[in-house]
Amino acid sequence: MSNWLDSHCHINDEAFRDDLDEVLNHMAENDVLKAMIISSYIEDYQFGLTISHPDITFKHALGIYPGDVDDVDDELFERYAELCKEENCDAVGEIGLDYHWNKENRERQLEIFRKQVELAVSLSKPVIIHSRDAIQDTYDILKQYPVRGVMHCYSDSAEMAREFVKLGFFISMSGTLTWKNAKEPLRVIREVPLDRLLIETDCPYLTPAPNRGKRNEPAYVVYTGKKICEELSLEEEDFKKQLNRNYHELFGL
Ligand SMILES: [Zn+2]
Image (cartoon, rainbow, N blue to C red; front, side, top):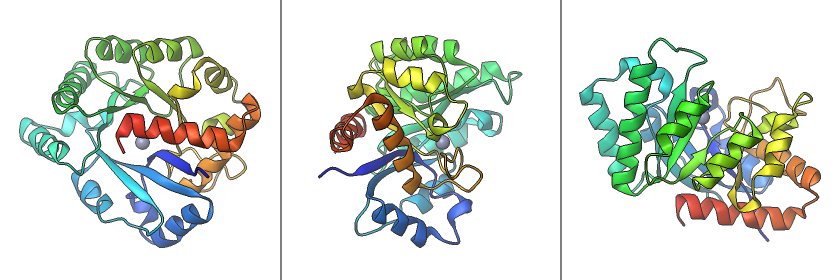
């Protein structure tokens, strides 16, 4: 029997400080037994490393978020890089470009993104990519490097998803595909081969239906997984098996 997994969560976020044990128990009860914890800040990363549950296996990623590049100097970049080198760190991310929140600092975003991709390449670790309103620039950079990774919370076109798959990237879908107005995400899951597909919550954000409006948590990844099975007429067990294979191919065993 295979289990569900959450390929991108922020359970180290303050939103979970008061009831983290309960959130971990919900995961176990809902058969979500693997999770990748993403940190944008060093303190969150260090806290993330202390999170444990007897039934759940965690992986860890650290990276400078595109929204924060203006606050990062060389010294801070080096501190991130040193932690990324450690064995505890399974991936560099989330990194990327976000022109939705700020386009003024585009050059700085590109510079920090490139430097982190180069870091990942030098460490032979995968990257976790955040891209918002910036898909072409994201693609143009990733294409230049021999890097593996995942497009997290993919929200661009099915055609573009195919291009990232050609680069060898995984495409990770969030709870937004369960929302009523979801059209493009349902095209995306038909376009991406199953051996390149992942699911995630990005919790505490992007809560899937029917819990939309509440805080998201890793246990809810099951709604996203079941929706994909329904849409693609997949047996749940087969899909879970494939997800686990993909997760380990990307992040290691
Ligand atoms: Zn995230």
